[in-house]
Length: 93
Length: 355
Image (cartoon, rainbow over all chains, first blue to last red):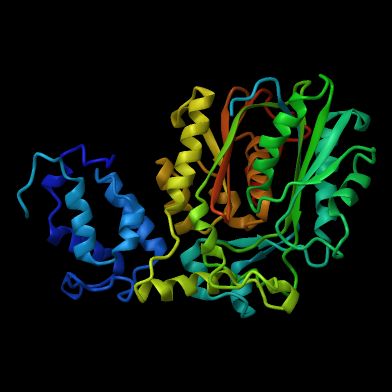
C-alpha cells in the first residue's frame, strides 16, 4: 500500500516550489529546469537524489526512491508527489 | 536478532600512521576539490605491513584485554576486503597461528565492509551452541597499498584506510554485552557495483584495477540515456536494519548514546547513514575519529567502538550502535551495552586519540 503524505505538507508544495527545490540542489536557476528535462543530464547524481529524497521525507513526503530514479524529470517527480497526497484532495495545483 | 548471554570481553585496534589529505593534494594523489568536499583530514596508510600482521596486532590486544585463556577459544572468524597475501594461502590460519595457536577452526567471514558485523551475527549463534566457558575471536584487517587500487581515487564516497581490529566474544562476561544484531539487504542492487564489468575472467586476474567510481559512472551514463539503474536509497537499507534490530532489542534510537559507523566522506555519511536515522554525525557519530582514520573495510565499526570506549565518550550503561554496510547492498548493525567504563590503564584522551 502506498504511504501518503500525512501532515500538511501538500499545503506548501506546488510544482513551482518543487522546481525551485530541485534547482537549488542542482545549483541552477529554476528557469533552467524544464518540466520534461532529463535531470540526470542537468547534473543530478544518485548522491544528490538521496539528499533530495531525505529533504522531501523530512518535509512530510514519504517519497519512494525507486520512483524518483525511474522518472528523473520534474513531471515524473511531481506526478509521484501527487500520488502521495491525501486521496480526498484532487484539485491540481 | 536479540542476543542473550554473549559479551564483548576484549577489543583491540591497530591503525598505522596517517597521511594527511593536504599532503596527498600536495603530492598530486588527491584533488583539492575532493579534499574540501569530503571533509576528510587524513587516512591510515600501512605501507608494506601485511594486513594479517595488523590483524594479529589487534587480536593480541583484544585477547590480552579479555584475559581469556587461548585454550578456551572455540575458533577465529576473520574478515577482510582486499587481497591478503599469496593466492591459495589462508590468511585466517596465519592469524590463528600467530594469536591463539590452538587447533580450532579459523573461518573467513567475507562480507565486505560489513564483515565484522556479519561475524557478530554468526558468532553469537556459534557461541550459543558451545559450552559456557568458550570464547570466539573476531578479527579484521586490510592494507590497500597495492597496485590494483588507488586509495585516493577509487571512490568519491570515502578514502580507503588501512588497519586491523579485533573483538573477543565470550559467554563468560565482558566490558559490554551484545544486545541485538541484524542486517538487511537489497539484492536488486547487486548489479550496481558490477558497473557493466563481466564476471569472467575476474577483473584482477587480467590486471584491471578496482575502480569503483568508474563502475558508478557506467550507471550514470546509462541513467542519462534512459536506462533505470539498479539503484535504491542506501539510507532505506540502513534505516530498515537499524529499525528492526532496535525493535528486537526493545530500544529506540533515542536510547543510543553513540553510533560507531563506517568512515565515509561527510556528504555520503550524512545522506546515506545519519539523515536516514535522524541523527547528527558530530553529536552521535564518530565523525572526528572517522575523518582522520579512513575507511578500513570491516575495521571501522570496531575501531569506532574502541575509540569511544577508550576515550571515555561512552561508559557504563550506555548503548552503542555499531553500523556497517557492504556492496550487495546490505547494511548491518549491532547494539551493545557498555557494562564497564574504560579502566585507567587503557584510557586515552580524545586529543591523543585524534593525533
